[in-house]
Image 1: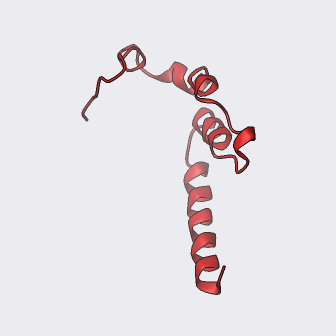
Image 2: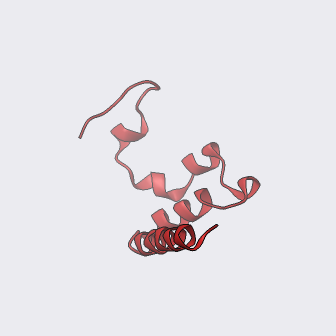
Image 3: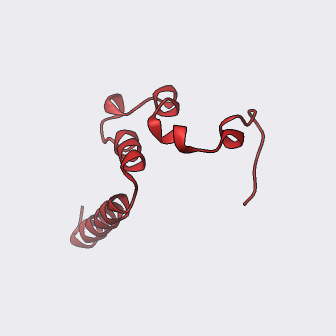
Length: 72
């Protein structure tokens, strides 16, 4: 990695860290588990859905059928 690419990578990593610090504890914990560098250490999709973060979502969002989309 050349100096410019290394600086860009560092800046992006720093920005991600700053953003993660702004998240609630539940959100931060889930994000950290999903963003592990080693794939085998990452949380699975099924485990992620059982994470306490999702207990804070309103019921209608949690019960959307597959293929259903929402708009803001």
